[in-house]
Length: 479
Image 1 (cartoon, rainbow, N blue to C red):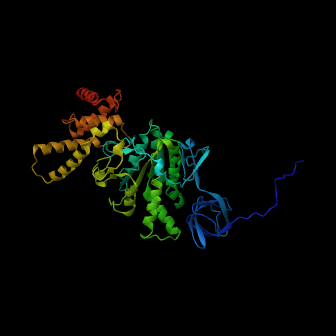
Image 2 (cartoon, rainbow, N blue to C red):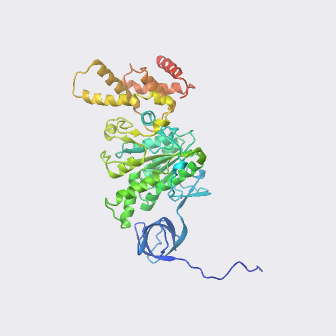
Image 3 (cartoon, one colour):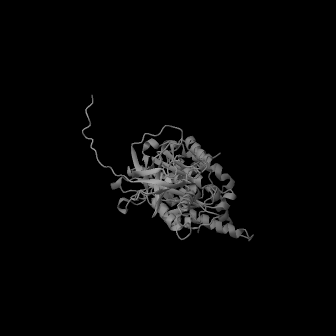
């Protein structure tokens, strides 16, 4: 015979309960729960959960976090008593999860021991440090002319289908062996695109250090809205532990559209008088969480590569201008360059990095000092030469040199370059070793230099004269 539980006491227990007044399109309207707070989790009697998103005088609006068909009008709702959190930690590496941390790859749920809230305050000024270490994407144009530092927020902007996602994917692949953990957030993309990204990561062996957070195109608008915050929370956990991380938001245009959809469903003002301010605050509090922490606070970093779509190259639309003002520079993709076969189709004149030059390695910085100016001058001369004017020999020489540089800067997707390879072509071009080369020969010579680099011990810290001697020897011996 068991002894009675002496700790049990009769008493009055009070709890708030509301009821569902209406439901549709992933939104539940609830009467009651007068003490509910924004971003609080609430539970429905069928086991579903929701997130309080709007407080009204009579009813409150909640985002459904599960697609249960059992939620009906009149159903009871109660407080759960906590905010929305996602599981974090190394168990997520190599996994595909939704914004709530549930697996989407058909594997068992990861064993999670730690959780972080999706919404968190950005690190304070005292916790932050200066950007001092380079972040290598593997792209020749970016790493030499538009450099990025660890902890920087660099916007990737351009029309649809011009290679923005390919650059972000290359950046993830280039982190192999660099002790950088990556989080890719795919928002509103079709399943075929998600599968293509996953296969590219798996083929390159990048899944070992990458997490995919996916909210597909057919997901509820609340899931697409929460996806970037979930990815940020996962990367933020590692940053607080002193690790270097990269988070890619692909893309924030669909995120803004999801937020606008939620605003319309919740009967908020959808016009220009309210929406731009809302979406600016939404993206700013997301991207401000990316930084580099001081050594006293762990020394970790979170580099952010948000992607945003323009329409017909219109940079002055309010969402692109919002993000340009929030981030530390932008990489602009031009559709005309893409149509002309100049890949990656990066417009060097309209792209800028406001921080990365301070973190660039001195050897690459010195070698690339005049490359950007030379290329921009070449573009102006080429435009002038189209009129058929008779050109001087010096101008023709500059045009020939510029055409060669344009061929050198071309790069295929999923083929990131090492920083040593960047320095090799910069020195070879800057010292005139490639002056006699025809533009169509550039690809073959660059591939040859990469082969020679694989067999040498030269590094970025090697003396310049040693680099020049090796380059001259290699080019002289080229068959």
